[in-house]
Length: 451
Image (cartoon, rainbow, N blue to C red; front, side):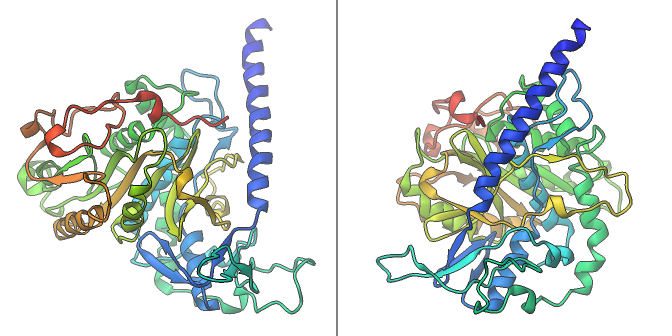
């Protein structure tokens, strides 16, 4: 009986953590997010000006269609531990999952895909504001276009403007046809040991970096875990993940990773000559706090079609950033603890993998340690990505960019090849090319803790 006591204590702790976490998360959700009617909202390269019902609906569908991955409870025990939940420690892994899921959506789904069942989510709405004056952008409320589907809350005024539900986007045939792919993609992030990108696989991969279940993970380490997870699974074809070294993308290393004509004997004749690639760039945007000089640069990156988001957050609290409005970041929060979903069912419900509550936070609360993600489908896209991202990086007021693209390979600069493991090394400070290798690593700053 005594041998079972520690397990019971751990289970009780997990239940208490889950309950408290959801109470805290609930407070956040109940706070209605407001959006400025006169300023564009950027979401992963797309812009929305919320001055009409149609535009608000376009924005809502774009947000809800992102895959939302959160803490889960009551999943099979993680190997070598007593954990059956990641509540309280797995938020950066969940943020990393969302970043990868967005890359997979772009890789597999039709362009401009929207989840057809997004119309049915009714949890939370948001308000659109009109500023009092340019000098006072806080704004005053105007009738909300962002009411939830089927909402009939008694608190709503009967004089309110028409709800979004009266402006439903016509369902796309191609979106509906893509639903089996969408459903299969979500299963890859299931909370079962076989799931290719599930918490069980990611924790197992993290062991090679000295991490274990219950530890906290930084954005740099998670980038390498994602790279290894994609490399080891057969479920995703013709996709590679490249992780930048010392804030530098070595273009020749990406070419060698993606150009299959260089290793034609290893692939069949029907395989494409170029693998699509997700590029992950761990960076540090300041010392202990975010350097304001980099804010415009981050905005420029989030405006790019090739950007799949940023994982980071505020201190001790990981988030997945997908856009911004004015001086506030738009994000998905992994901290809501939900019960595990049985994905062995046919057509299991997808509602808990999509969020209807857009949330914002000021840029100055963003932790400087983060990982930025990009996607290129082919060689031409990669070349365009290099050009577009380099232009965006030049928007910074700092002397040195957040990161750089350089010709050649990492070993040309005294670094090991991309294929080697760097998962023990936290992200380097931002330095010019001439100072690569002289970075002052700060491991503690690369970790996120949720208390």
